[in-house]
Image 1 (tube, helix red, strand yellow):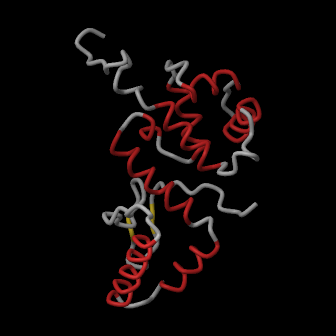
Image 2: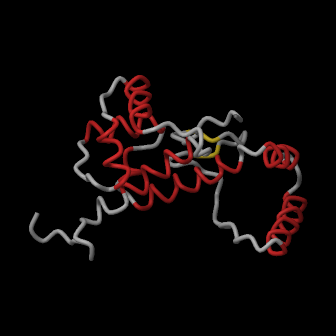
Length: 178
């Protein structure tokens, strides 16, 4: 379209990060690169789970940025399979919220992280602040990056109820350990 801004690489901003976002979802769902399915098998899994149709070649082309002409139907199939809102692929704000959830889901795959979180549940705000201080200082000692302190515990379109549960669309990949 005339007048639509293009990025310096000639790609429209709306599609610029599509391949990165798709790849991030694949990596989050299959963190072990050795056990990650190839694009043909993944396409079969997507088709089987959603009833939609996508080929392995087309999936590879989308994930590598070779193709950017994703249809609304394909966008919906991918969003349905990965459990994200379709806007994740197209909207920076939604993408950031989902990526924060991906980071949390990835961290919670570790049994010790889950155990720490479960044991902290129910502690007073002052006790939680003390634990956060200890964890933050330990991360500094181990030269780990700071963690975003703006997390609200809300999902992408989710809200926290009085009982602490999150409602709404929340991306939760399979958290079973291999």
